[in-house]
Image (cartoon, rainbow, N blue to C red; front, top):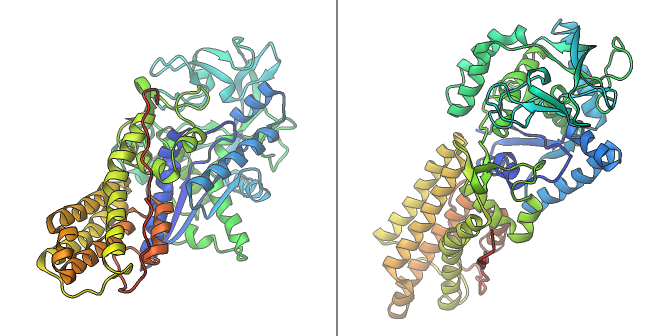
Length: 544
C-alpha cells in the first residue's frame, strides 16, 4: 500500500562550494532512498534548499566586499547545477530567501510567542571593540570547553559535535578582527527549549530503530536538560521579526529559521502543484513517515531543537527517523571542510569522475556508522574493481552475446533447467534482502546486496558457459542467455537508485522497470551491439 514519505535533507549554506563529504553525508543518501521509495510505490516528497541566512555567508561577503545576496546567488546556482549533473531527484530545491519561507517562519514564531514558548531576555553577548559591533555565534571562535579543540565555533564544535554558546568558548576571538571580544548587554527573544525537556526525552525513548550514535548523542544531551537559546541576533541579514518589541537591528537567527525550511519548502511545492493545501498530506497525516538526512554535526538540531519547535506548533509530524551519517575524512583522517579547504569539492569530483561512478564509489563508502576515509585513489579503485569489472562487464558481455548469437534480439525461451531457476530465484530473493536494508536506511548494505546479485549472474555464466554451449546447442545456449538477461533485468533495478544514468541507458534497451521487482523480458526485443556502461579510470601515480 502506498505511503506518504517525507524526506527532509540538510540545507547547505550558500557560502562556498560543497565537498564530497557533504554529498556522501546527506544529499546522495537522500536521493538513493527517494528513488527506491518511489520504485516501491510510495508517495515521496523530498525537499531541501540553499540556506541563505547563515553567518558564513555574511563572513564571506564582508571578506569579498560584496553583498550577502551576491554570495547566495553565486553558490545557489552552483549547487543547483551540480545536483542536476549528479541526478539528484528533488521534488523541490529552493532557498530560505523566498517569501513563502519568510511567512512560514514568522507564522511559527508568532505561534510560539503566543503560546508562551518565546520570551524576551536581556543577556550578555560578545561585542568586538575594534569594529564596534555585536558578534553572531559564528563570528566568534575559540577553544571548545568539552574536548579542547582550538578552532571551535561559537555555535558548535566540529570536533566533538557539541552545541555551544559563544560565552562557553575558552579564549574567544573575533572572526572579524581577531580581537578578544567583550561582553555587553543586549536584548533578544529566547525559545524556551527547557519547557520541552521531558517531552523530548519521552520522544527519543520511542526511537528504538535509530542509529546508535544518533540516539546516544541526542539522548545524552536531553538527559542533561535542554537549555533556552536566543533565537534573534544583532544582525541585518536574516528574516525580519514579525513584532517590533526589540527595535531596529535585530533578525531571527539562522538555526531557528533554517529547519523551518522543511515546512516552508513543502508549502512552496504544494503551491507550485496548484494545491496550496497538499503539503498537509505529509505533515498532518498519521500514516506519513518523516526521514531526515543530515550529517552528524546536525544531530542536535534535528533530534532535539526541531522536534521541540514542532511540538510547540502542536499539529505537525515529528521526525520518524534520523539516519545521520558520520564524517567523510581525507588524508590522515582529517574531516572534510569547505571553510578549511580540506577534501575534494563536488565540482572537482565531477571533473574527474562520471556521475554514476562518483555516486557508486561514495555509496560504497557511506559513513553510516563510523567516520570513513576516502581518496581519489579509493574512488578509482571502487569504480574499476567493482562497478566496471563486476556489473559493467557483466551487462556488456551478455548483451554482446545476445546481439551476436541470437540474431540481434532477445531469444524465445525454450525451457528452464534447475540451474536457471535457481539463479532467478536467487536474484528475486535479493529484493527482499535489499528492501529490509532500505527500510532501515542501510544504503551501503543494500548496494552490497546488488553487487551480490551481479556476482551471482557472473557465477552462473562461468558455470554454464553460453559462449561454448551456443555453438553445440543453439536452443540451450539461447535459454542460458535469456536467463542471464532476465536476471540482469532484476539486478539493474537493485542498482537503479544508485546509478540513475546507466539505469536510464538500460531502460532504453530493456524497457522501463515494473517497480521494485524483476520483470520478465520480452522475446524479440532488439538488442543492438552494446557500448560499455562505464569507463575504466586510468590511475596515475599522482592521482592523490
